[in-house]
Structure formats: structure tokens, C-alpha cells
Amino acid sequence: MTAPSLLIRDLHLAFRGWAGQVDVLHGISLHINKGERVALVGESGSGKSVTARIVLGLLQQTRSARVSGLVAFEGRDLARMTEAERRRLRGNRMSMIFQDPMSSLNPVYRIGEQFHEVLERAEPGIGPVAARDKAAAALADVAIPDPERALDSYAFQLSGGMNQRVMIAMALANEPSLLIADEPGTALDVTVQAQTLELMRDLVAKHHTSVLFISHNLGVVREFADRVYVIYKGRIVEHGCTADLFADPRHPYTRALLAAVPRITGEGIPEIDDVSEAYFQPLVVHEGCEEPEVEA
Amino acid sequence: MIHLLSLQGVSKVFVQGRHEVRALDNIILDVAEGECLAVVGESGSGKSTLANLVLGIYPPSTGTIAFRGEVLPAKRELVHRRAIQLVQQNPLSSLNPQRSIGASLRLPLDVHGLGERGRRGDHVGQLLEEVGLPADYAGRSPSSLSGGERQRVAIARALACESELVVLDEPTSALDVLVQARVLKLLNDLRSRRGLTYVFITHDLSVVRNIADRVAVFERGRLVELNPTEKIFSDPDHAYTRRLICAVPVVTADEVRLRDRLMKKENTSA
Image 1 (cartoon, one colour):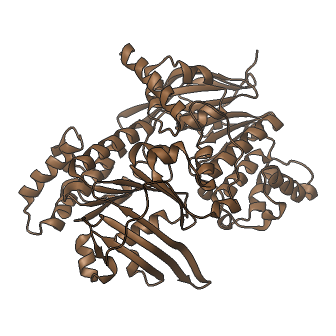
Image 2 (spheres, helix red, strand yellow; image 1 turned 30 degrees about the vertical axis):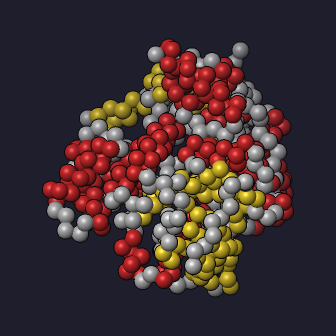
């Protein structure tokens, strides 16, 4: 059996500050099999984005952060890699798409120059001509109408939707095996968001890319993910296949979260507690979604 | 019948060098007293320009805006500014970080000379309680509050000077879904308790479905559809409205069916 693309087991995170220690993650476990799209859904402050930063190996460098537990990428423990090895993975074997494309692209370099830099991660000696050809093909893949013109543009000359597509093209350019998407498209209009998600879904299916999809939007998660982990205050509270979890939410927090989403069929605004003891009830795992054994 | 707010042939043109941008084009729109009118559209549709015109931040290029039948001047009087208030998307940037919650809420009372000077402190406490916060929050700073609490303060501030029309510009889109439900509930309660009128600007159609009486759909500065909420979601007139509804990510099987039905209509009419 091949190792899952990503395996997280009993991950703890705490920050040490002047006021003492703040616990952020209380031992979360999750896994993503090859080619699977897995969502981590929760509210702000639940620990979604820090999890992504740990997977990328970025938080381990922060001096105030204390990380413990296992994070294995394709069967290799991140903690046992050197910093240089972890750096080689980023932008190459694993890549990330951020929420706001405008602030993730450099405003003073043209898209083409930034794309060249991205391609150099995988192919250090790649020349400007070869890089440009590759970049143009990647942009055509994300349905950008005139790739050559986009390559000669600055980020601010393109629309939000186009920038998001450029980000997706860059993130997938080196054919990563794991893509981390942190709230992609939330800064975009609904119609553009729907298009980008569809595009992203087609592309990751084509390349068999595994995806960790981080979002607070349950509707988007339902449409994108195969499996869902619901996270509340640094604890996973429910885990199941998307269809099961949406048809039969079992944890009080998941139920509250689902009930709170306004419906386009119009059922009014429900009365829901934003804090409740019940939200701290133990993890509920749906049938057939147990965590795999960790191979030593 | 005199409407609370009435826009007659309102256009707004911005001139940038030799370019002219027609942000709003000949808008005719009435808002009845006590109603919640949703204004929806994508970025660049003219939603925010409409808000700014209603608030009097700038005057229309052509056309008139009337409040209770009285045409508003380009430069608003204090009394008009009192009656029409704004709640913005991000309360962190709309509340002064240096000023206590109490001071932020007291300022409109002082500016408009409402109530006795000595009783204004009590009034601030009452306002906080009205939006579901403890009165002693007056002494706290915006940074010590959560996002939902801050938005409640912003709502209290908009109500402080006994406003009649509140322009809500994406008031819940920066909030988590559980907090959003509670703030929407509060807005509904306040509307019926105080007899307020809302112009609710948003791109989130699922929120619109549950709070608005009527919906105005804007596309590139034009009002393309104006209908009761019920009609918009069951049988929209305009293809653009259908496209907007169909793009909403949904969570229940009923919603999927509604969307599929609208999408089918879109395909047969195209």
C-alpha cells in the first residue's frame, strides 16, 4: 500500500507569548490519499490556516511556536527533514493557493517573470524562452484567453478572477502531488468563484493532485471535496465523506454550522448559539472514514 | 403615496482623465418605509456607488434623490445626515481604534445634540443593550471585541441618532456563519422594533432570500431587475439574476433542486 499524500497524527500547536502559552491545536489527526480532495472546514480561529502552515513546514521555523505530533508527506516525516529539504518541497512537490490573489502576486514584476521563478523551483536551469512557453501553456490550461498578453501584464492590470487563475496555474505548474488551497476565491464574486472552483476541480482531477481544501464556506466545501473534517477550536469534531456528512451531520457543532447557513429556498434565520458546551463533545467519525494505521 | 426614499433617473459618471465611467445609469427606484430592499450585483455593478449617493457622500451627476418626498440638496443638512446612516462591512476599520466603544457611540449623540448632555452616558448603555451587548462594554476598546461584537457596536452607532434609513453595506460578509446568523437576527428584530428601513447591499443571495422584502439586481450600473424576494427566487425575469442564484454554493438537497430548476429555465430560454 502506498503512503497517503499527507498524514497528520495527533498534531499539537501552541504559541508561547508574554502572557503564557496559548494552545491552538489540541491533537488533530487527518489524512489525504493520493488524488483525494479533502476539506478542513471551520470558523476563524479554529486552527485551519495554521495547520496549512505546519504542512508547508513554515511554522516549525517560528521560534514562539511549539509543534508536536506527526506530519508525514508521502510517508516522510517532516520533522526528520532538514530545513533545506523542506524548502525544496515547497512550490515543487507541494504548493499553495492563497485567499487573495492580489496580495500573493508581486505588483512590481510581470506575471511572466514571476512564473519563471516558479518554474525554476522544479527545473533550476530553465531558460527564459522555455519558461515562457511552459507558462503560456499553463495559463491556457486555466482558460486564460490570451496567455501571451497575461504574461506581459502586472497583477493589477488583470481582474481578480484572472489573478486567481494565474495563481492556480502557478500552483499546479510543477505538478505538485499536494495542493493546499486556503479559502480560494472568497475574495471573488460568486459567479467567478463558481468558475474558478470548477476549473480547479478539473485540473486536479487531470493531474491526480491531492488537495487540502481549507474553507469556512460549507456550500463551497460540499461542491468541491470528497471528504470533510470539521474543526472547532483546535479539535476535529466530525469526519466523514462529503455526501454523508451533509446528509447526516452528527456532531452538535456541525449541525449548528450547517443550520446557520442561510438557504436560497428561504427558511428564515435560525436561532443558534454561537458558543455552547455541546460543541466540545468528542469526535464523530462516519463509517468507513477511520484514520489509517501509521507505518513505522 | 410618498416613499421614504426615491431615486429619479439617477446617474453617476466618474471622469478619469479622458475616460468617462458611467457607474450608475438612469436608476429609478423607490424604497417604502419599513421595508428591507436588497441591492445585489457583482463588483463593478454600482452597488457601492448607490450607497454613497444615498448617504450623500457625493451628489448624482443627473437625476434627484428624495427623502420623504423632499429632494435632497447636493450638500446635505445635518437633519438629513441624521436620518440616513451607514453600517460598513468591516467594523475593525470603521470604528476608531483609539476611541472607547462608549466614546464612539456618544459622538453621534453630541453631533446631533440628542437628549440631555448629562444623560447621554446612560443612553450609550441602553444602545449597547439594545444590540445585545452588556452596558459596561462602553469602557472597552474595539480591539478587545470579537468581530461579531464589533459589528453590533457599528449597528448601535448607526441607530444612535434615531436614524430612519440604514444603508447596510455587506454587514455580515466578514463574519463567521454562526455569528452572521445572530447578527442577521438582530437586524431583523431592530427593524420591526424601531420601524427601520434598510437598504441592504450584498453579493450573498442566500442572505438576501432570508432578510429582504424586495431585491434590486444591478449589472454594470444598470438596474436589470426589481421584484419581490419571493418572485426573484422562484421565477426571476432576468437571465443575469438566474446566473447569480445558480452560482450560490448551497448545502441542502432542496436548494440543489431549486438551482437545477432555474438552470434548466436558463438553458431553455437561451
